[in-house]
Image (cartoon, rainbow, N blue to C red; front, side, top):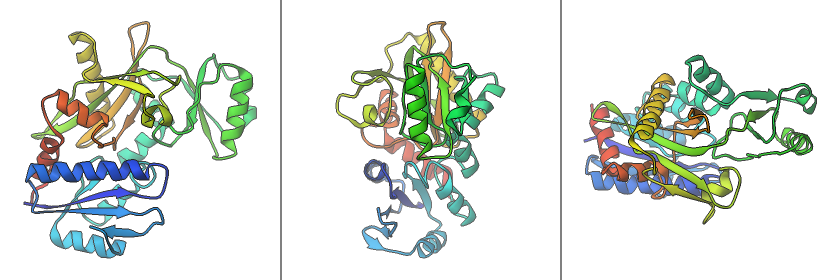
Length: 317
């Protein structure tokens, strides 16, 4: 049986959520009984690395993992995890890991590049504009409300829904003081769904989708995701079999088109015209006990332990 190293933490807003994901994966790995040893690797808020609570240098850890022929399970959200940096580090170190490769993660974190790529595959996505200065808003065919969000960040940070040009200009000016570019996007109204895809027994499988119903905010931003009562998440989604199959088929299509590996989660809107519009794909979805993927696994009468255990089989040897 292989050894498993679970990576979590990293400095940033999602540090605590990442720790919760890592701990849940650790419990699932123990329950699976598919690994000879399981270790928690945490990158602290100050950037220090530790393994099972003991300090360790990054390169010493990688050498140890190579020697043990260990499998890595990244559970670092945001910077270093979702942007493909950890994947690249593991790839160049010759260490196998659960999840998409660095190239796919770099594509998925860039919402404009992902949208252009999927649109080229005939998949409906919101119309988007990359803006680097307030003056670039002049002449753009923007209808209100619209969506403003970073081009390459995660967990719906700095997500806005301006309803007038005055609001839009103020938001873009504020955000461009913090980053070099911002995305102004068509607002797509309708019912919001998210659908995970996991690989089990060497085949990709779309899970029962979740419907997201906002209860406090107008957009599914960081606060709506992580605040108590911010939204209602219904798994499986209360829709008929036909729509369920359409959502699952689209999630599979996006997963495979983007070159995702092992797991992903695609967010989409079912609009008034009956179209499914893809908002984005997440290559490193949350793994806390209340996250979408574990909930969807349970709805499929599976468990996170089943998925983690299947990764042991896939990467064995």
